[in-house]
Amino acid sequence: MKTEVEPKAKIKVMPGSAFKIETADYLPKLHQLMIFNGKRGSGKSVAATNLLRMYKETGTCEKIIVISPTFNSNKALMKDLDIKEEDIFTDPDDPSIIQQIVNIIDGERDEFLRYQHLVKNYKRIMKSINSGILTIDNDDLDQYLLAYYDVVNNKFNLPKPRYECYKQNRPPVIFLFVDDALCTKLMSNRKFFNLVTRHRHLGAFPQGGAVGLSILIAIQNYKAQSGGCNKIVRNNCTSGIFFKSRDESEIKQIAESFAGEIPVEKFIKLYEIATEEEHSFLFVDLHKKKNQPSMFRKRFDTYLIPDEISDEKISTEL
Image (cartoon, rainbow, N blue to C red; front, side, top):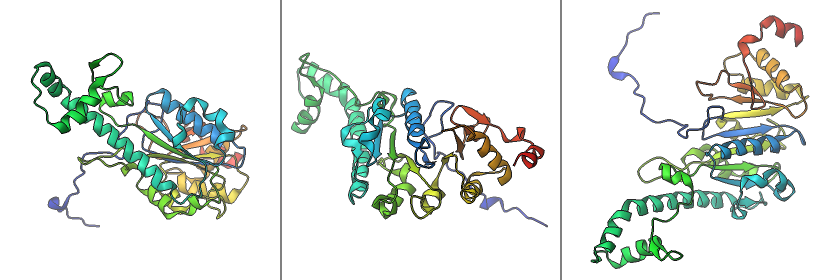
């Protein structure tokens, strides 16, 4: 086939990334849309809370929002995650739940912008106060002096940031964990699907960029109508966690969606290796980091490298 290049029509890649938040080398990039697929009692909540714990311990998780009607019975799992009462939603059928979550993210954006504004103007206001000549108007008086005044120590200070990440000029990293919400109105709510498709653009800044939201969703079936994963969610996934299933058709469906560049048969072998132990799972990261040797892992701690599984071994063991 003959080709001819038109240099003026080349695609120009604009700067920026869908995964802007720096995370620990061994953790997935953010923002994520991750599904946890497994039968009842397989360990989905344990896996999700452990992943959230790792993000929190490494400084890339400031707020966790939970939608779960069974949150109170799972408190022991989540006790170390510092989840605020106002960020827990136990009624997935509540039609206002998505708007409430959007409002939380917008509120976090506004608080971050407010802190940046206070930092920017701190020296100017303090200079005015220390000079003995107040050159600030009444609006500044209300906005700044009350914010800077430390009642306990009777002096003016820069207010304490809500999160330490403010000092790094970074907004908070926010997660949403959806658990035990199968067969609820949430899982068929168009507003939820809209949240899924624009999750990393939520809490947009006037100057560009956004706070964003990473979403973790626990499901019992991959494609089934009842308790399954909607196509919109599946198509937007950045990673998936898959526990042991005896449904061969479901395993094949997962393989067809998450095998990436390896053959389906090799993916299924990886799946078998990863799930051979009770409560173990296959973790598939569709956007792995360059330093990570494979997009496949057994749990979070063991990389599975497909090149080391020969086609002969697959044919004899499958």
